[in-house]
Length: 91
Image (tube, helix red, strand yellow):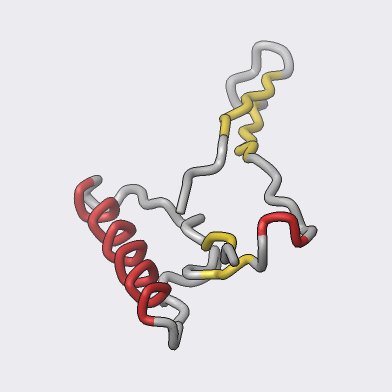
């Protein structure tokens, strides 16, 4: 597993503080098979982990879910990472 490169971009038009847009930019994960098939662990739309019959993958699922919940509670329920999705399955 690894982190993707990411950045926060802020667009401000004029001096109006209500006219600010925020964008999260992140590294594009290739869709070709050069990195192997992509395995999803958690989805952006749900905090429910995706079950895997592979014991090693299931361990990753449980760790990522645990890390997400710890972040949520450590920030007094103000924030958590929701994009803990998966990895390429290397052959």
